[in-house]
Length: 269
Image 1 (cartoon, helix red, strand yellow):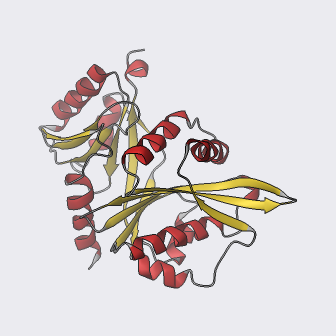
Image 2 (cartoon, rainbow, N blue to C red; image 1 turned 60 degrees about the vertical axis):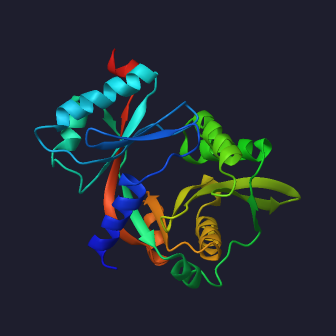
Image 3 (tube, rainbow, N blue to C red; image 1 turned 90 degrees about the vertical axis):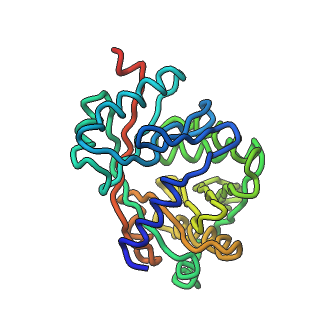
C-alpha cells in the first residue's frame, strides 16, 4: 500500500470512523467534523474535519460553543492535508493555542519486530500496569520525563484500564540498580478492533536513562503484542526525539499533525 492509500485508510478508520475511547465518551458526526466528548476522564476534541473556506469559521465557532457548554477544554488535531489550507490560522484567530507539531508515522508490527531482533535494554524489566499503584508510577515518570502535570493523564489511564482492559495496555520500564527498582519509562498501546490499527502513545524516558535502548524496547514489546493479536499497522504521533528511532525500526512518515488547544477560561480572559 502506497503513502496516499495508507493515509486515506488511516483517515477513514481512525479519524472519520473513530469509535468512543470508553463507554463514558461519545463520538458525534456533526457539521463536517467528527468529535469526541465526555467527562474529564476522556480526551475531548475534534478528530477529523472536512471543511472549506465558506464553512470553516462557523464550524469552529460551533465546536467552541459545544465544549464550552460542557465545561471542557478540548483539542483540535490538525493534519497537514486537512482543509481549508488556512485552517491553522483560523483556529488561532478563534482562540486556539498550537502545540509542538508531531509526525504521524505508521509501520507493520511484524517488520518492527524483525528490525528490533537482538536489541534490548540491559538491566531493564518491562511490566504491564494493571492497578492504581502502577498508574501512579506511570504518572510520576510522565511528569519527570515531559515536565508536565500528569493528573488528567492518570485519570484517563485508570478509566481506560477499568473500561477497556482487553484493548488498552500500559507498560512500565523498571531499572534494577543497587538493589533498587526505579521506574524509568512508561508507554501505552490502544488497540482498535476492526480497524487493523494499534496506536502507540507515551514512551517518555527519564533524562538520565535516555540513550540506553529503553524506548526502542518498549516499541518492540508492543509490536510483538500487536502481531500476536493480528493487527496490521502501528500508528505513532512522534516527537522529534523519537522519530529517528522509529525510522530505524521501519516506521514511515505519513503527515505532520499539530494539536490546537482551546481553554474556555483562558479564551475569555
